[in-house]
Length: 272
Image (cartoon, rainbow, N blue to C red; front, side):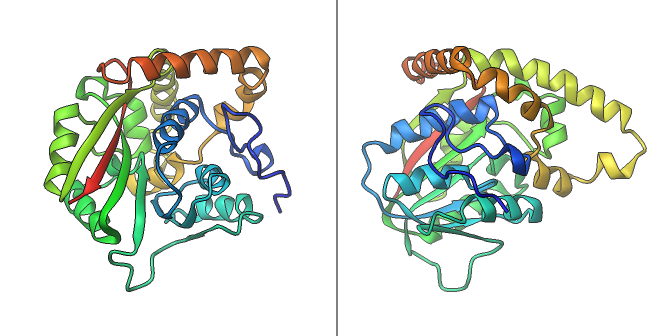
């Protein structure tokens, strides 16, 4: 059972639970900074997070007065989230929503989820149905077709997005797009190719082995909580020097959020 402190370890990383096999990855840390900055101007409300993974972000939201539910279909991720949220009564995580959830929530969040769904337009329309009128949607997706790599294959992605493409899909689902921010530059731009090389080597070595190659759904289920490399590196980037680097990178990505330099998009929209 996880018995760690639910409060963030630092302003830059949030919850870490190495004893459960989960720590925040660098891209998550940068995305988290962008999400919390955007939410700073919004009042607390009832939240639905689609694909809540480890539940770490829900801890941050609870500290800011939000409450609600996370939905996570991966049994492994659900088990980790249940332990991480054991001392966070404002949120619970379930494997599927009960009936009668239409137009109930003030906020719907889905971070690094849409690219895993083949029928992405239908998914956005379903998410819109959960929101109250004028409710807020915030999603993140990997950016730029040209950046497709072994990491996308490993994670079970169907696609990456261009800015105009994701804005069009969100707008077509009944939303007014309020902002689309690029995030991750420069750190993610450096780390992604290294990660892709590692994933390519792993997948090349796993060819013909169904226990490691797995199908797209199995890879999707693991992608949000697979932290084998990060667990080893976390003590290095969680020290004072690492914190200083992440702080600097968070500030840089904030000032360059309107440029298309990063590796992901964070979209903020309001239901019509």
